[in-house]
Length: 118
Length: 114
Image 1 (tube, rainbow over the protein chains, first blue to last red):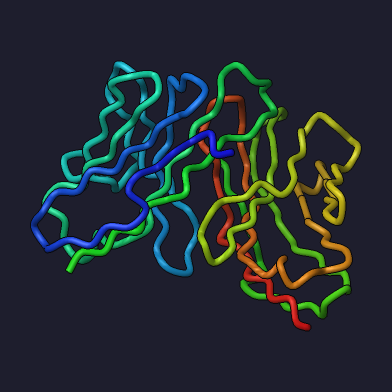
Image 2: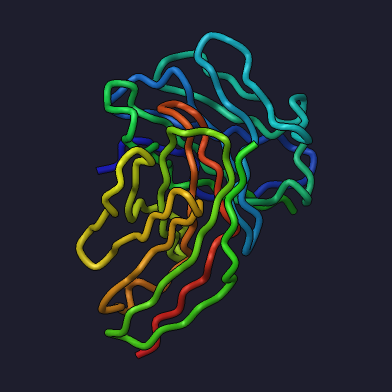
């Protein structure tokens, strides 16, 4: 079964509203989670690294005031797209690794959130 | 910085045939991990196979195998006995250590034709 849960799976909203996306690790504690964005027919691009109890680390070109990340607990990271506009429409996906597993174990991905801004 | 290159944007293969997807990468690290992910139309990221750089033996998972050439920094995926359900985007990915983000290639869209 899924070990990383992402919610919602699809959201449509008006331009100017803020949208919150949740990423939960279901049966492990994740001190670090990653947020990726994927535009149609493109690859996954890392947006930011979410660190429990501290500030997120954003990739170059990603506006931290636009994409607010909160990792308030060991099982939950949230990404809030503030004042969303049509150009923010994309597929957002999170991932996390179970720190209790070996170094070679892969990250677990959520099922992603399709965000459509009208 | 690490980079991953997939030079084949699209490929097609007849059902039951074999196909090889190419991937090269660039890194100065000696220890790292390589992955192939499948992304079907549902857009779920599904791990297909993984390889540790310190292992010389090529990884295999049923119909999926890799040809890992560390010196050439090459990591190709071979799919044998292709099935219609293999139709998807395939991403090659690189990771340096246990809890670092994945770096993805641009992907190869594979179509399996009946």
